[in-house]
Image 1 (cartoon, rainbow, N blue to C red):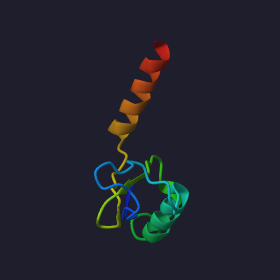
Image 2: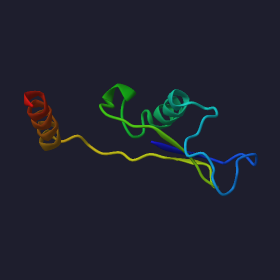
Image 3: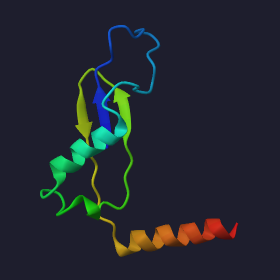
Image 4: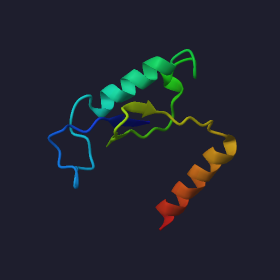
Length: 88
């Protein structure tokens, strides 16, 4: 999930801060996205197994959601990589 917010006019134009430090915070962005997709993209948000939330400045405020299906192959790759890291 990437949430884009309009940069405040008080920010310098040539060197604006990268991170967003205004409300809504990440947990509220997540809640809004989960509620909007519940019953449409998935049956219940308990089906979400992996996520990342990013907040950025942009001239056009919006939320972009990328969705993928976790396959057995992807699950195996994650487990295999985790075991390799643990062995190091």
